[in-house]
Image 1: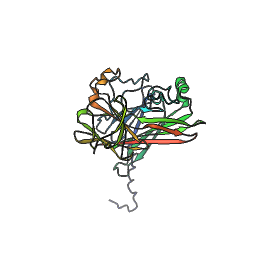
Image 2: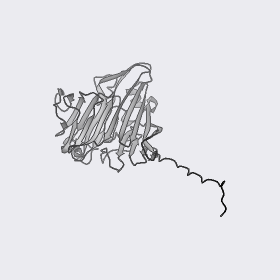
Image 3: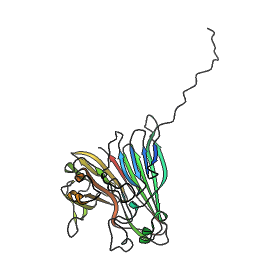
Image 4: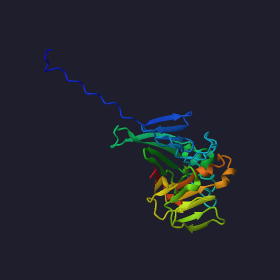
Length: 322
């Protein structure tokens, strides 16, 4: 064999693209879904920008969705994460929002999908996407005539849903695009899926002031030192003593299932309809209240005021496990 000292060296292997998040727009352009390379997924209806599914890498669903939830844009969705704006509940004594339906119009309006952005994990061995952010927009031009008439203010909302390997972040930016000031409330109405409400407790609300909407008349009191447990119909608006940065933790059977940290969302609503669920036409199965608990980050005690051109932002970060 003849030695060839100048023979060409072997070409180095060309690296392939790192695994990327997969985005899909489906159901006649009415839903947006995202799946990370590691398997976590989220699905959002453009109707209400309502998150209807959030699964971990093993495919375990984290959100409760009623079996009778309307997903055809005919009614606000029962379950998932509906978005409340510009009023929480009804406010007959607040003139600016008194004509709006319960929880406002954001959850019953069609939003625009504005696109996605991703981030790569520096610690990931494959360099693939470790998160994906989906942005949705709603403005005056998206509203139906009835909503425009009931709330005639120039506004713009950007709602961002960020799916990560360890959790889910939802954030909202509210901008006054009109010429005069207006007030609003907002809330992320999260229905968490659990196995047995009797084994569930919520910590992080100890010794916190709360409004109990079940009592007649509605009362304001302070919670005891222990975690909150659910033993009947519950509808409370807490102002956690630890502030938004202190986690509110949902545990089941002594194990942490979800941890919620808030930014600029000073209140936490805890809701379970208990046996009243049986009288709700879109709540199924009838015993489903045993498998869900709503722990909802919001700004709903009083009103947020925006002058012309001003912007407000709030968010929640949900992580799973310990």
